[in-house]
Image 1 (cartoon, rainbow, N blue to C red):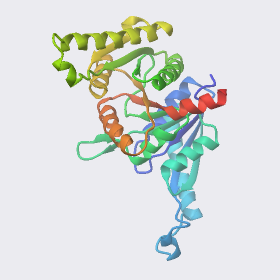
Image 2 (cartoon, rainbow, N blue to C red; image 1 turned 30 degrees about the horizontal axis):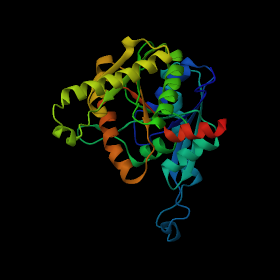
Image 3 (cartoon, one colour; image 1 turned 45 degrees about the vertical axis):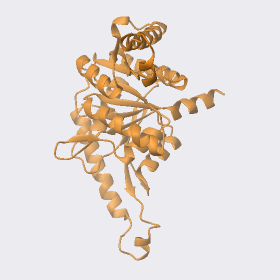
Image 4 (cartoon, rainbow, N blue to C red; image 1 turned 90 degrees about the horizontal axis):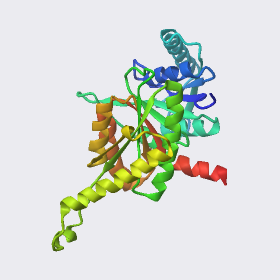
Length: 311
């Protein structure tokens, strides 16, 4: 099938295991028409002040050739391990900002999927998002897979995290489900919908005579449940695959994903910048840290770009 036929894989130069390349080969095994570009971004010192004083030498042709040779060896190793004949093209580009360079490469060369490995740091080997990760997630106009170190068997479960709190989010819900349906077809996986129902109890309501906080919470949960079931019904998803609980997303989503043993989780990104991005980032880091599955992130920029094309 045409979808996921042009995959951009971000190489991790300091990692022994190239999780993103392995995941790309998993997808390519299900789509024989896939082409994988294995991308390495090297820092461009050409206009730095250090370069003027010759304290730091630019990447020489010899060094670039050595990097390319190493990339080819890695590609061949992973291709043999996966018993794959997929077309994998090593590519080196230079840039002052790695995140910007990756997005520029994606935009200019028509990729339909970006795959990057999750970053692990610290003595407890926790997973965090780096500034590069966040830049890619907020600016990519195609889906981004944050790949984890686990097997990716067919016939697993795919979770789509839907949100009905904002009108703009409804378009993102539809787009996430479309992408999940594409993935479910090529992996023969089962789609499940997950929604959390945070209860924000207005303090002023506590002063209202005969007011019942328990009844208010029950009504909020029922409203979320109704919206989830309506969404599932429109897309022919059984009610048995709809999961909703009262609580915050960073608590509910990881818990349900663990119970379902999900292999892939689709989640939307607001694509915010600045202070709000930092607040949202903290919540997402908790989610990504607690979910063992691959995370597929779609942002609102992707939806806006598609709407412009339709117009």
